[in-house]
Length: 163
Length: 98
Image 1 (spheres, rainbow over the protein chains, first blue to last red):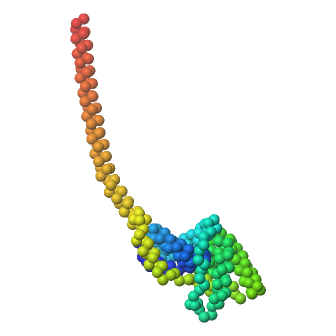
Image 2: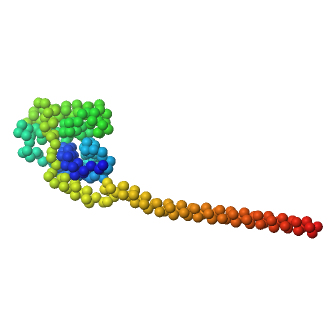
Image 3: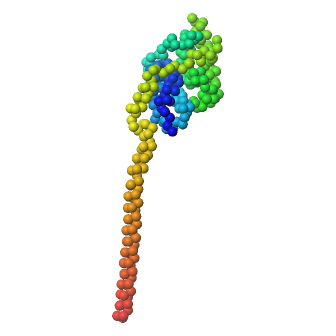
């Protein structure tokens, strides 16, 4: 039984787009990559067994594509549009400046660490799920998380001091 | 400061642009036929449909070849019998003349 592709897109578009956006920090690039990943899924739709399988597949695909894209950009730097700061739709107790700073700092992490942080804190995945998704040992995932948090903490404190 | 909570807040999913889904679906319609999910099963059906008559034709050709071979063998065996009979007659005639 082939899934309803339009429904798959509706259910997963913000997951895919958001991961790409947070990773690349480039709205145009994120849209392009997200579109591509959905088209990839469309070509393989017969192999997808359930909505949960589709979500898993899309998450995995966008992660790998983001990492590949980041490596390409290191070799061929491109001028992309920076992610626009959040519009005023955030919850009233949010700190938009802190949010933007954190996103910027995450964008400076090495690629593997960056995707691990995104999967943990945007997608709320466990280290073991992240390890399976990225073909990485669980210990490596935990190490990325631990080090990334330390780096982020350190840089936030440094930025506070410099203000 | 609880960094992990801050990270969860900062990394709440960003909604996709309003026309994103429509553009994805529009792009699937311009995919070349061979890239669509139906292409492979359809190609398999067409291949089988094309191969079956050819297989039947080959089978009949092979059957005709076997029949021809059998007829040739039969003809050769008749010829051999006739030759042997001729040889026998010739031997007899030669014996009688001595």
